[in-house]
Length: 600
Image 1: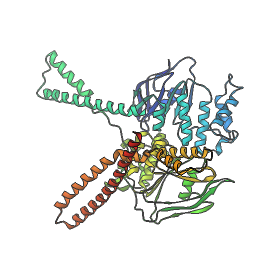
Image 2 (image 1 turned 30 degrees about the vertical axis):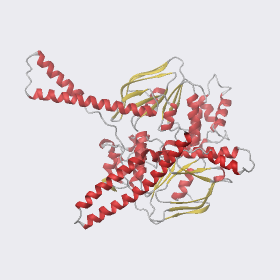
Image 3 (image 1 turned 90 degrees about the vertical axis):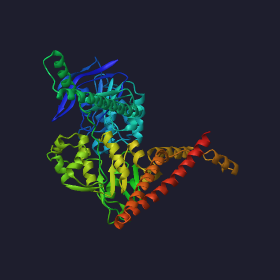
Image 4 (image 1 turned 120 degrees about the horizontal axis):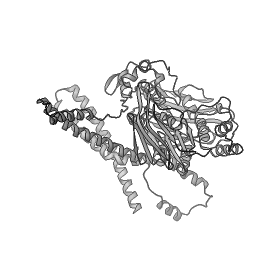
């Protein structure tokens, strides 16, 4: 059953057209995810559907007695209001006046709030988002509109919300960058692309395939029309005689074809070559780091010596101390006990959970030039303007005021500034908040090539699976426990540990039982091993090709000793890398054979 229809919606924002006469329908069983790069109008579309913003043209028609609930991307809370008071006030009506207080306390308890009378001002960013989410979920509605519902939520809360939305009856329309969340919750994807809407009746993985097919088809149509146009152009150049009706029709067909034969616009993509400073042997060490507020410590005696190229993820519930740990490393807060020891060459880039202050009157290009006019990358010296181009800020946007940017564009601009500082230790505190999926994918590729140390606080399961090789999880009493691999590996290891601790104590196993138990251990790849196994043969082939190319160059440079030394050194480095990859390949192949044998 159709609940809401948007017809011919057009919306302009400053010099940009967000929507150009688009249509969108919402049925009672739809679970729709809206995707698109920052600044395309995802949040604006939700506000229009919610009736909080009017389109320049077109209309939104809502069915009789259709009730809509809306969660904004950045909720605003009255100063001094309690948690329960906010949820009750947001939902009280004449019909539920006597029951809403009890319902509010029930959902807050379910979401893990021990004190419903705590003032919202005292909460962390993630806890505030949970309060706003509780206010959106406590009352039944026909259409639930959620703008970045997973922002600031810890991973356990994201899993809880995911299951709740999968089981929920009624229509759902949401904007989110969480790729696992999109794939598991949504059955329809709506893409905003250059003022148009494209619908895909599939989850996120299917959307990626369908989008690629659509773009291939558009490109094929363009090439076909271009070939026809070339023949028509040759005919026009020979001298078209416009006396007859037939010739006039031919000329008109040429003009029409010329109008529609335009190359399909390509999506902008963030492209950033690695920018970093040299990191010496002495990097960063945390020694018995302790910090607390009140009686309970947030961090209790945490020690770790970071190694070059460490990829460290930090996870834990909201308010546990993840951001405090980052601030201790940065020197923004002092520890109660312990110390942070840094090498002389360490240069930290800190991408905080909340953007630094951005002057709304400052021009975009001036904000970046304040950091550096030029930076040195793998491709040589690159200007601030060129870096902005690669970060999707075209010429017009570069000279716009920062105040005209969307929330996601401001986040992207702030990220670019951090990267342009050329750090060799990069601290990312909730980097996925407000960044679009395309930007995240390119950022992840950039982090693959980053030669320094990465320290990442994130609730985004996909991002941690993609980038982290070791996780530290906050546990009770301010202790941090180490886990190897990405987030999926951590989740599995944590589940196994909790299962073991929940089992009753057993008597000592006999030698026979130990042998039997050892035989029944289930072999499987970790997430990182599976990732390496899928790609390592291609990597080996690429290295071998590069070595072969260097051997040819070495033959040609036989009399140029300077060049010969450079090529020989590069070849030796590749040969060492090839040996390392071959050892990894043999290990993974042997493990794959054992897994297959056990399965059979």
